[in-house]
Length: 223
Ligand SMILES: *Cc1c(COP(=O)(O)O)cnc(C)c1O
Image (cartoon, rainbow, N blue to C red; front, side):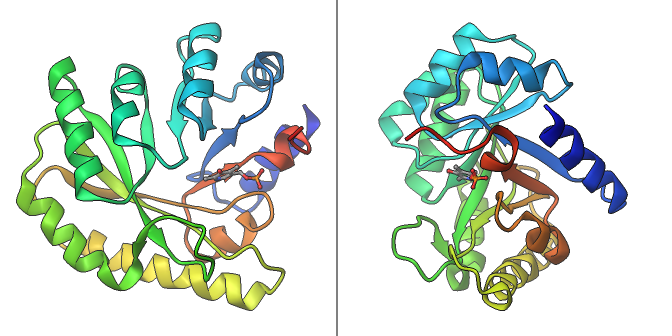
């Protein structure tokens, strides 16, 4: 797995060892996941509930599973027992359901709020301009069983570096503002999850501390 090692080396060379690398293993076989696991990678991400459950059953129990896709409320209960971080919460209803399922299990579930920064309609998330109000709403709910740990965003799928950089900078600005506020205990702004294979360098430049990389680690997906 020289790609992983070179990516990790690359991050270290940047002096950015506080950057969390989530290996996005969607569509990849458990064997491929094990190759990275054996290199010491513990954080993996999936975007489909069924695939996440399958892999969680088959693979070592110390893997930290991230859910990075759009999550339907009726499926929260299936991943609640083991999920490490849910990246893409974009409604109070979904947050409420996660809190409810976590409460049933007597645990805390960590989530990120997905912001919409791309100019493509296909990507989910809260409009960046609505983030302050959304966080006020979140705080007022006083959820006891979720930890809101930060923000997640996906830039426009574009070769225009300036455009992508502008989107990441915009989200990073909101992250800093939200982080600077004193929230009640269930909001702790620690993670800014942005950057994928094609744009993680730009994202890191903008202040990302969690990148979600699939293709660059595993090669092209088979779908
Ligand atoms: C697939 C996916 C990624 C990884 O994309 P690559 O281009 O393969 O690195 C990151 N984030 C989310 C939300 C994804 O669905």
